[in-house]
Amino acid sequence: MNASFKTHIYRQFFTLSFLTALLLFSLFTLLYEEIEQGIVDFKVHEEIHYLAEGRNAPKIRRVETTLSVFIPSNTLHFPDMPVLFQGLPIPFSGEIKIKEKEYLVVISQLPLGVIYVAMDTAPIEKREETFQWWLIVISVVFVGISSVLARFSTRRILKPLSELTEEIRDIDPRQRTARISEQYHDRELNTIATTFNSYLSTMENHAAREKMLISMASHELRTPIAVASGALDVLDERKTLNQKDKKTVERIRSATSVMNGNVEGILMLARKQPVSSRTTQTLLSPLVQAVMEELSNAEPTNKARLSVLRNKINHEVVGDPSLIQMLLRNLLQNALEHTQGNVTLMQTEPGLQITDEGAGLPRNARLQLKEKTLCLTKYANESGLGLFIVTLICERLGWRIEIDEQWKKGTRIHLYFPIKQPA
Image (cartoon, rainbow, N blue to C red):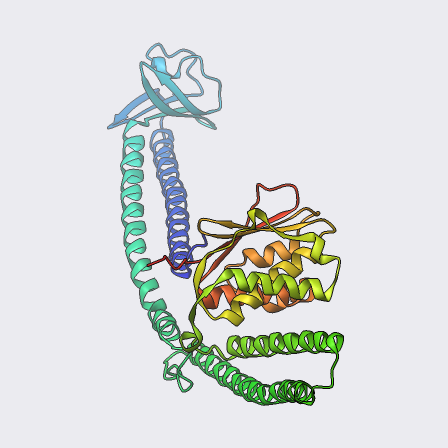
């Protein structure tokens, strides 16, 4: 799951605060060490200056945590030399440890003699440790305050964006005049709102043009069908047709009726008209039989390939018969097109099952049937409009279509729909 914009901003603020605290901690630590080293050097030089000035005899000096010894050049032996300095080379500068204590020792060769200085580092280290603990506490407090301020600032920064998001979410697509406010203090949000409103206007113009085109197409498509139907009625009234011609006229009349039903169904889907006025209790058996006869008449070899398993389909459903017939026709036609084998229908308790014996539907067709949201341009160029119409009709009727992924001998499609229970 993708993180929110709010989380990204908060993390950026928090990371910046943490890095700032870490940098300040390091800088103050280095600065303190430099100051401390400067103080130590100052004390050492002070002791050197004090002991070496005008002295001709050995001298030992103890001041708080500092031990200093001066040995003139003319002194060959000094028995009172502290153990701390014994055995050390001249010159020397470093830390040594005696009796669990650490000392900073500096031994310098001067023109008048040798001076030894030792400082107990325990007080220095204690001050340094206290200073570091205070730095840690201050850094933690700084990061905590920065975290709270970052959270508060993030909410304050994103509040206008959240309001814009809510406005966009509350827009009802069915209201053609719905627009979002463009009165924002931030120029970027005003740009987003203006662009979105412009997009809505463009989409509404396209929708209006499509609606007008559908209305014109409705008239243009119905007129030829009505003319063809009227011409067939005239032929019947003349009573000059033989039996073969009558059979041909009936096939034409049947095809015209199917075409008229398809046109009405497609226009209904395109306009998103309510189907309540054309919804009836319908037996599936005659619709299945009509579709099988239509496909067999279109291609004689289909008659031998199409069959109803167990020869029984007696479900009664509620829906528009023309839409149901169009749905069945597209499913069976797709099955026939993607296999050279047989195609069977079988009634199941929750609906219908259509099985073919071929290589199965191609991947793009399977993906189209699995899509949760309808997308014409994504697969229509590859698999045609048939399966797209199937998904549209299922959506309109409230039916559900699934592919049996466990079936490996071709393709098996399950069609689920509410069944009218007998009274």
